[in-house]
Length: 272
Image (cartoon, rainbow, N blue to C red; front, side):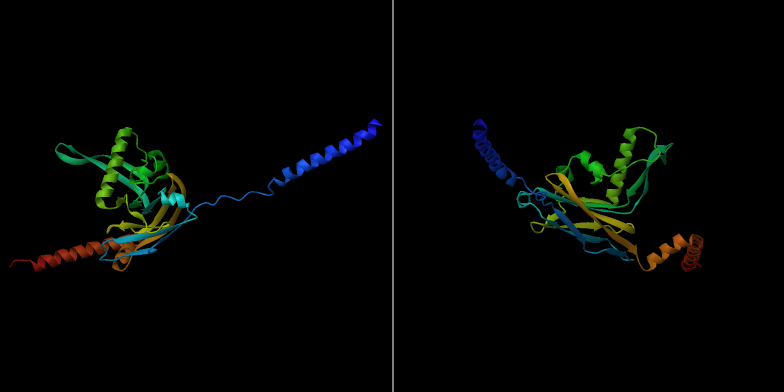
């Protein structure tokens, strides 16, 4: 019969399909595959607090860091870059332009920038412009030339604002409050680095923030931050507290000290 002959053929075809399906099913992975290992970044500072005393002449802050799960090939060919910054307390800053008016130097124009760091120190493995493009650095606010200097309520020529920005950076650099070292970050081992940042004698007190940025082939992959307290101690702190908490009494004492000092000098150097 034709029907009886077809049954063995169908059975053989079914077994063949099942046999082909088993290897295919064995090749399908069960569950998600292994996730790629990503780099890690840990940082620490040589101290968490710097005290300003009467003989304070500045200080050095050392920032230590470690890369974890770093790619050995990228380490060997120097594709990891680190930028370390120390930002001081933020406050509004006013820049004034002086011009001669009828033979007298006078302030004629001024621009106030909102919430800019009072101090800023930066160290890097190489110049930051060689690590990232200016657009990305400005977006991240990394580097002296890329800090956000936004004017408050200024209506005028954009070129004039650029001049005020440049003047602000120049004044900060000349006073030592802004500093940069394009070779200040050094790898002491394939995965350990160290950066030294200089705090000038006129560093503002308050909470500073140390930032560490890790770049891989020019791309920012990680960043970390740590707070640093700069505090006045002793007589300096007492005077500061009195000036802020009791301004009237502080002013009267200053006037009294000036009067007594002036009277004492007149008596001491009086000619009979």
